[in-house]
Amino acid sequence: MKLKKLPRSFYRRPTLTVAKELLGKCLVRNYKGTRLVGRIVETEAYLGKLDPASHTFRGKTKRNEVMYWGGGHLYVYFTYGMHFCANVVTGEKESGEAVLIRALEPREGIEMMVKNRSDNRAKQSTSRSTLQNLANGPAKLCEALSIRRDQNGTDLLGDEVYLLDAPRIAAAEVKRSTRIGITNGKDKKWRFTIKANRWVSR
DNA sequence: TAGTTGATCGTCT
DNA sequence: GACGATCAACTAA
Image 1 (cartoon, chains in turn purple, yellow, orange):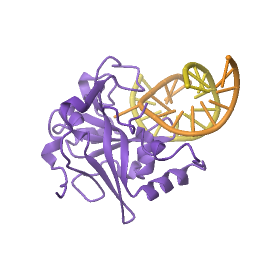
Image 2 (spheres, chains in turn cyan, red, orange; image 1 turned 90 degrees about the horizontal axis):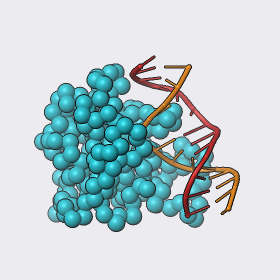
Image 3 (tube, helix red, strand yellow; image 1 turned 30 degrees about the vertical axis):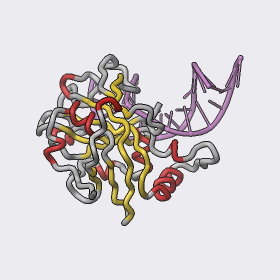
């Protein structure tokens, strides 16, 4: 069966629901005529005003403006002086909520992803670092898919970046845990992963 | 293999 | 002026 692009209505729902259902969907990035595709295996929800760890906790700013555009947009931010992270904006307009994509399982255009990753850094991946290291972290997948500041605010119903529908992951296969790399709101179990999936970040 | 640290800069206080 | 939704290299054992 042919997989379809997810409709706007998919995103305009409660953020935790979207975060959970994003698991197993495929993220597609059209880059220089090549389709780069990865299956989402790990997400985290950021619930705006309810969430001290969210960029929008303290209200709208120039940086987090995109999170108020409403479900179906891509929010890309820069952090640690060198990394980008990609979020899917969820909920209605002005909700200020989004889901962070934390890890992908590479599916298509893998050669290009490897190239993107090694171009930016003058690193060399030898024996050990193979596909495992390609997109198992929020900053890594941005590099692999060449998502940068230019993609901030991209409409996910366009052709540049979008998501393809896929059969929903069974509830028994979804693991819920605490989020990673934050200090505020540590206790909230708003991270979703596919159980026993080797592509999840650590 | 676990734990520590340097890189590096836009954004908010 | 401080720090972060990170990563990879380096150190010690």
